[in-house]
Length: 219
Image (cartoon, rainbow, N blue to C red; front, side, top):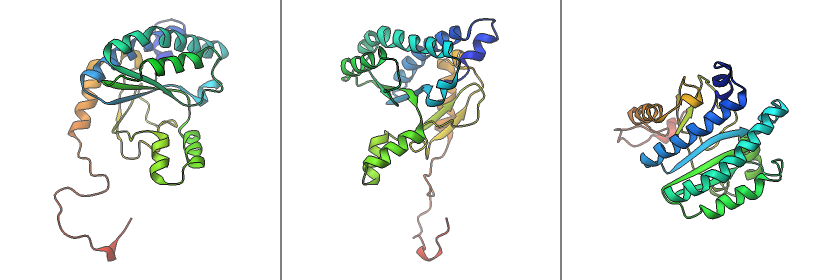
């Protein structure tokens, strides 16, 4: 969800206003994703690298997360949305952790959409933690989360930025030029149209029935 700060600066507003506008966009995209019957929506809300931002901006973001977790739980309950968080929690402000746990507990039964907020998240750190505790590939993948089918990057960026690196191994990538506060349901529709128009082979071939010649395997 990139571009909140730039959105605000282009309008002569404080960066915090861009983040608030981004939170409003998130609500509309959650509703649109549920309407499209998307099972899981993971949004990159705050990366581990974002701690390097100005202290005032980080503080404003933490207060915004508190507001979102407080205000949106009832909405999630009404619409059958399960809310959870991935990433580290030990570095978050003390007031956020109980709100996350309460939101997760109350919305656990949501079966229309699983909304995952990536907070203080780093895919590299997540991979290291999963590798330390898993003895099989299946357990490793389960510790990280579901595979990603479609990864959307907003604001014209063309990189993954340490987001779901393992899970996105076979994801289709869509790069949108819209800044996140301008990314609406129509933008999501276009991204899904791109996704549906692509042929997904997962390393194989479609329409090819001949036996594989194991003697000529080339990576």
